[in-house]
Length: 226
Image (tube, rainbow, N blue to C red; front, side, top):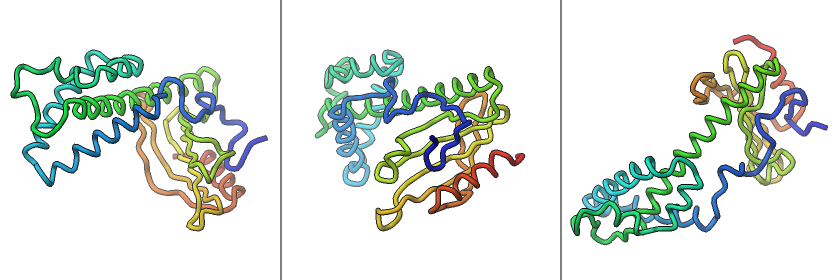
């Protein structure tokens, strides 16, 4: 049985999961990457010259990671080397950034490469979902989904449904209200580029407290013409 705001006849792009296997990173690694960026970015105001030096080194390492880490498995293997990643780039003492450890530079660069890989994988999954929809003769498919509607609103939920032919999209979100006791259902318009997989978010369609109203709005969106 379909849950609130779900379409029984809209096939998922992939089996629903909290985090797809190809995007899973140990929480400790994610924390280390977040902490590294949190240490670097405040330097832009406090020590702009140091920040520019650090950013330049991060960008150099990011370019190297783009060459050597085409997927997440390679990135996770590389990040274990820590400061040695920066040492590989060094051409002498001038490569060091005053007051910033090489391990922080390495973690920040890994964080940036991780976001690039997530974006790339997300795009590929959207395009694969569209391709399956075409093969099965479907009008709309779910191209992206995060969270579980069964756990909303305590755990945020979102999915993107797209029209297979033209890429017209709708974003379904479920989150808590101000009291954190009721679910709020939201619809936003979107457009999926059927060639590149890029998603553009448009105007809000509506916000609802009743899942039945959400379902009705979804039916209207999917039945209308662009």
